[in-house]
Image 1 (cartoon, one colour):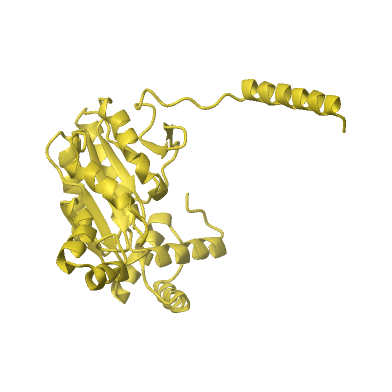
Image 2 (cartoon, helix red, strand yellow):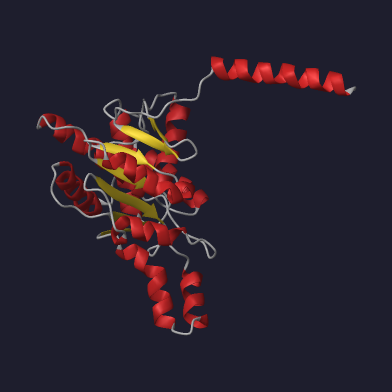
Length: 292
C-alpha cells in the first residue's frame, strides 16, 4: 500500500469513528439521584448508573440470621431518619445472606420512609476494584441532598494491595472524613478483610510485630458494627427451603421436599442460603413453576 493510499484510509476510518461517536454519545453522569433507588458507580467515567430492578429477596425469607437482620435494620433505619449510625461489616461463611441482607434491609427501610413521608434511602454499589476512586464518589455524594448506603460486596485485600490504606482514611481518618449523608456497608468472608496468612506474615517478619499487625487489622476497626454469619444447621436449612416453597407456592410434599433438600446439600457439600436458593430454582424448574 502506497503512502497516499494509507493516508486516505486513515482519513476514512477517522470520519467513520467520528460519525459513530456522534450517533452514540457517551452516557452523562446522573445529576438527579431521585431517578432510582439504587445506582452502580462506574469509576472509569465517574458516573452513577441507575439500577432499574434490584436483585434481592424479601427480608422475611432470610432465615437463620434474625439477630443480624434486626441489628442491621435498626442501624440503617436510624441513619435514614437522620440520626447517628455506624459503618457495618458483614463477615463470615459464604452463601449465608450477607449481601442479600443489605439489599433486603434497604428495601424494608424505604417502605418505612414512604409510610413516614420521608425521602427514600439510596443504595450505591461500588466494586472492589474501584475502591481507589472512592474519594471522588464521596465528593459527588456529599453534594447531594439524599442519604445513601455505599455498598461494597466481597471486600478483601491481598498481600501486595495497599488500597486498604486509602479506604481507612476515607472511612474515618481523613481530614474530610465520611460525608454525613453517606454510610458504608461491606461484606467479606474475612473478619479483618485480609487473609490470615497476611497477618501472620507481618507478625513473623516485622521489626515490631504488634505494630505491623495493628496496621493490617485497623481497617476493620473503622466499622463500628460487626455482624458475623456462620454455617447453618439442618433445621435452619429446612426453614430456608420451606420459606421459599411457601412464598412461591411450589407444590411438593414436605417429606419429599426435605429428602431432596438433604440430597442437594450433600452433593454441594454445604448448607447455606445460597445452596437453598439453588435447590429452589431447580425444584421450580422441574415443577414448571415461576419464581417471579
